[in-house]
Length: 529
Image 1 (cartoon, rainbow, N blue to C red):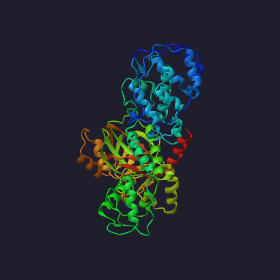
Image 2 (cartoon, one colour):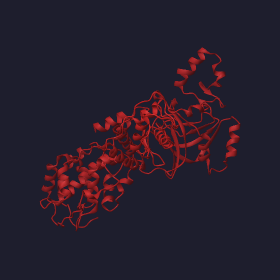
Image 3 (spheres, rainbow, N blue to C red):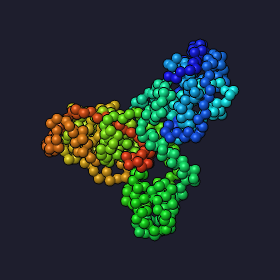
Image 4 (cartoon, rainbow, N blue to C red):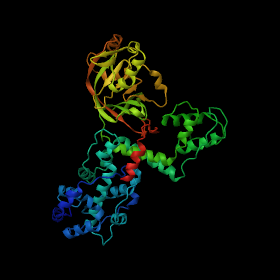
């Protein structure tokens, strides 16, 4: 804690205003802030002479009267100064501390955090950063603290729990103590803000800065559609535009403006297709051109929306976890935030959306029965039985305790392995006999559960180190075609996420189609707030 000036008279004014504090404590926090690269050039590093004058309670009252929009942070400000015995936070015996300059720059650069939040009393805030002789040191300190709480609520916190529920986001949001976080920051922990955010957030923020630079330089051109797909070694005037387009976004780096489909362009097109969830075949068809023609403005909005989603995620991920990203149709196994392996996934169609939530992997079931959900039975199976009396026999189904189920075997809809992580949505991971669907570009085919292309690999990973288990034993059990439950000794967290923009393990910015139409509604919610 810094020695020097104290705000002892603050106690009186805050107790007088306690009713206002309690009332304002119910306010909603918005979203907005900047955290990573700090440009100290914005603040020249000016320092002030130390002052030993205690703040008059009338002066504090005057501060909030003069800046009424900051009254919403009275409770937080009082709690912060109370914990530090009302010592000034942003000044020591030599003047402003370094953290003052860093926070000022971060508040001024909120757009780099995907937010267009208005800064309250901007001109006074800037003037206080370069304190003039007539400015009160205490006003400067209070203004800086108030701006921090505004910044933290938007950038570090994001939308409220109720608003997350409207987005059908069921992963519990970790609440952050902004007062404790600020104390860490002014005590010298410069990366305290960065550490309070999900790691993907910082990667998207850097990508956002790059796209804003492209936007400021005019964006990228619109590529005209061709009558037929373009392939390697062909000549076509449209290829000139495609080279210009991909050079702006970074995939194509050659100084080549010819109309030839070169090997270098083929590599660039394949990279673009991979990072946009398209068939990675190097052929430029309508789908590839459609993705190229999505404007830089739309891509910026897409990043901003997904940065908001990252604000809701846990600060620190588990040592190991399974991550399914619904729009990417992918499953990743992560250990120490490094990719162990990745495989394709099939998720729920738009009418049977896969839920967004976190679970804990507890069981593996080999050769599972498929206990057919009542809704599927009523809408699909029972009408099929009415049309074909042999339907159950032909599809290896039976009635069991008043419900329909499909017996284990090669035709079972769950395949050979089922992965159970109990949840209120009755969603699980499983194998599938319909492996051809993994070749499809858009893989939203299920009733909500998640089919994966590498169930044996996932099972081997989850059982690794578990006593008595080996690949040989697993193969023996699978060959019996009899249901077999295994309780996992190592319960691994499972995250089912919805990110339409993300940075992959190779450091490449990726975009995916908004298959459940969630981006637009979230963008409207952010604008409203």
